Length: 166
Image 1 (tube, rainbow, N blue to C red):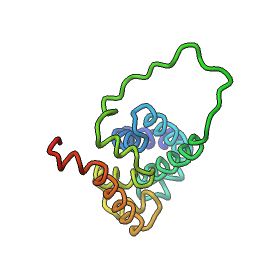
Image 2: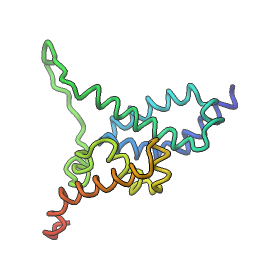
Image 3: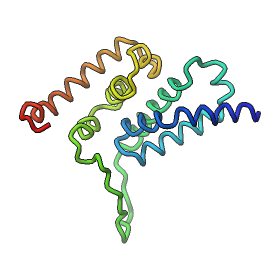
């Protein structure tokens, strides 16, 4: 049992920075990214012995779990939430340094699967085949999602580049 825990701890140590970057790109902010990574790692840690034996690419497995968890959370929370009473003191959020960055705003506007493909391809440097395995989709789906995402980013960011501002 201790050997499995040590193996999982080593995996987390090695993979955590990349998972946090991926989570940040998926969710759009570091706080939700940390929550997403923690939630997924808790679930994966509970089944680590089985996962490490049956899975050739544990990082891809965790990325797919993160994408699925993010999409599931997004589906659950996009519904309207009604409050009986407003809080007396509004919560003060720390400003996100990338909040007004045009690229991050454009990425945040992409659908979750397109955002995941773009982040894995251009931020993490994975191939189409690796992305397909990671997200559990076909390579053709990766290509089409990347194409749609890049077209949306070009539409949104094109005026910035054409005007010479960036």
